Image (tube, rainbow, N blue to C red):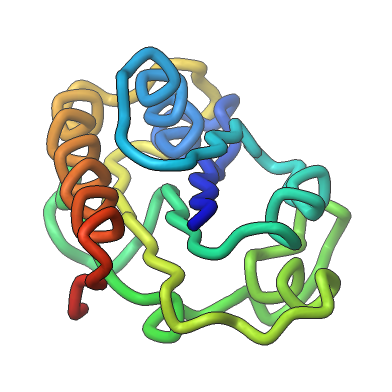
Length: 155
């Protein structure tokens, strides 16, 4: 099975870029399975070819749900909501990109979200979000191990 891990977010806006920061660390790790790790940032349409060939996907991004900053969420894509408008090419989200790929959303797309503390002009993560990255990495490794055993996590 081919797994694609996408790091989403705008790294110019502090914690909004946590997905990009996380996949940079992932690229340095020895991970199990047939993986493609992509720093998407805000250019999600550039990931379209990888999305088209993926059997499974893990999406890493900032996610606001009202919990404490640095909280790590692990949920299925169908529990997420997309943007209501497209203000620019950067306004494409994973839902619209999957539609452009001409695929039905497979049941095994997992999203790992990190509650941001500060979304403002900065290329640095807030300290609370930065220290949550090892927890995000652990969640990704656990998910990959479950994939390699042939079973999916229940969200």
